[in-house]
Image (cartoon, rainbow, N blue to C red; front, top):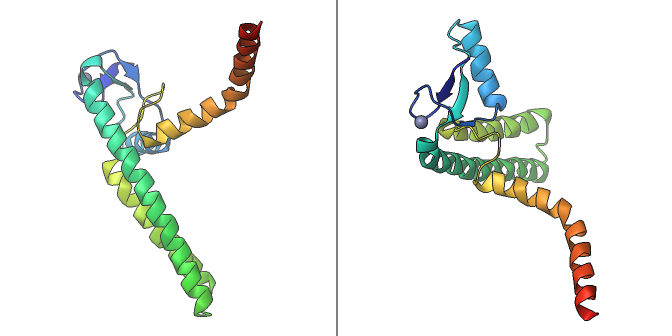
Length: 150
Ligand SMILES: [Zn+2]
């Protein structure tokens, strides 16, 4: 299996790309069409800057679209309740429109790295990971503070 950079498309070694749902689907579709090359996708060191820009842009757009989609669902349901026109069709329509808005962000789709990226989404994921670690860090701080008092 060759390592291929997703930007310059050359056979090069680099940071492995994370296999997400979109990539899995593309691979599956290619296998069905017998177009699969089964290369391992990476980002080479020369293309890292370009990758970071593309990934950050996609993550920003995805978050924006998710927010708009959520608002659309809320607006649809609120209107349906107020107008007493609440039905399964309204709910389905709301989620259809929301799904369409989310799907639009895929036009800018760019995969992330296995080790994580620096976009909005990755930063959020990173923060939640850090938050889990915090209690232990605080204990350490208290210990050092006590030592200082002595
Ligand atoms: Zn490259």
